[in-house]
Length: 261
Image 1 (tube, rainbow, N blue to C red):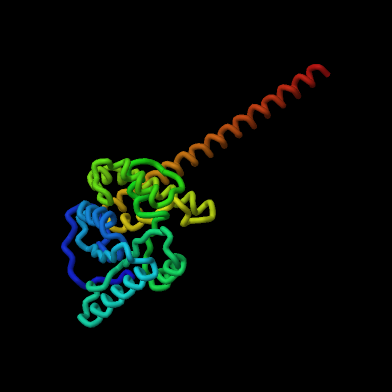
Image 2: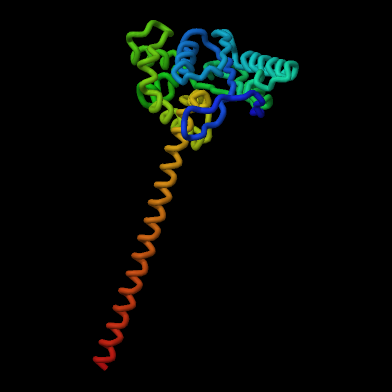
């Protein structure tokens, strides 16, 4: 959905160039936990280009994806009508739980077919929050996952969160969710319980964090390549030394044979 923007942008107040921020729309189920976390996260990232539409607990995935498509299409129509591409969204996300919802596969396929992105959690959004405070809790029913979160945040009221407590563990949550997702994919079920895609949504919102993690990944890749190169060079030098030693040994053996003869 990325488009060329005609509107003038103020120059960034930093030496390094960054990509222009994108307009995001997040259509989400849930009316308390998801709202409190996502609003808090957007505020922390100081990203004014994220809009939310919370459909409440009654929003099953198919309904939610349909709502997202409707809003995305309406934004495109407004952009065309006003001749202003800025009115359309660059990314539209559907945030929902696997839970016991019906037709989840169809909802994901409908989203993909319409250029929408999905951030699904299995069993529920609380898994993403739990990962801010501890490592993978393993397969859980949604009620059990919610109880785990309550135990980890005893000061928060039911369904509410302590955002400051959570956000302190965001980077750990990101890495944990990324690892769980990778392990689930390698096991042949990328949407297994437990798994969550919310880190991909927050990564899209958090421009500075995304660039920082990309830079860190580049450094790790460079270090890994340097180590591999050094290891290969060491192996080559060892093989050469062993070959020289073997050649010297063969020469000495040949000289001793000649002397004995």
